[in-house]
Length: 325
Image 1 (tube, rainbow, N blue to C red):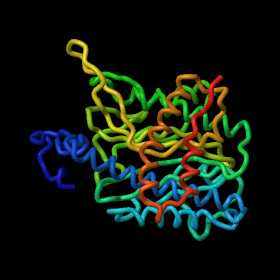
Image 2: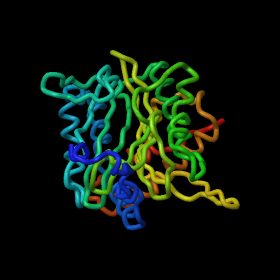
Image 3: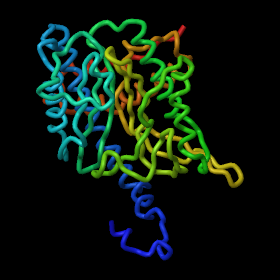
């Protein structure tokens, strides 16, 4: 409205430089974000271990989407310097997971069943902001669900290790996450990545990865990597890590960049169709899971009053390497 009061011929319209300065984090901010994601991973580990234990006794199936939402928020609230959820948690079972921006309410709250479960959640810590999505299955996934999950995972894996130039428009990176889905004539109707703040907005402007609109990415920009697939009225899949841009190499005057993960939580091996994964992809999954184990295991062992032997065994199970022929 203020803009309308000015003479348009005397106004220069340009993007505020503050937006880009905020999008490019510094060393201290990246270090603090790494700390936040370790805390977040511990909370997710407790939550999914709790779900797994209740699933074994089938008491999980008296829970609802909202009770699971409250449970994951409660586990986060026990972590150092936790302040609040970074957005309204998406806790979706079965066909509700096919609704991209689903929100469980008193009217829609659905009982947990042996189906696909999608959890999109995050926390605001004084260290920084987290945003992570994991899709799991509380029963036995069928071949269609495994195929969809694995195609989404392949795009996610490709994007997390892609090498690109510092002048690459980020729109070009969006295709990388979709190409395996496109091969099956699948797609998802949301962006692949958004900027994330440091104890600020979980959706922060300044950088993104999407079909419409893009910019050149710079080192220390923090974005999400979240391809998905949604079959209406049946199930939905989304896999989301937070990652940041880092220098990879420089040849003459051309700078090459790539991404480093911030998120530290395993992908669900039970939903993978290993016949669709290459040896290189399995190697990358194993390396990522080993990094998670190496990071979290010492903390679990140093705090036996908070993390018992059961949760240590659970971490070993979900990060066990995938064997290749």
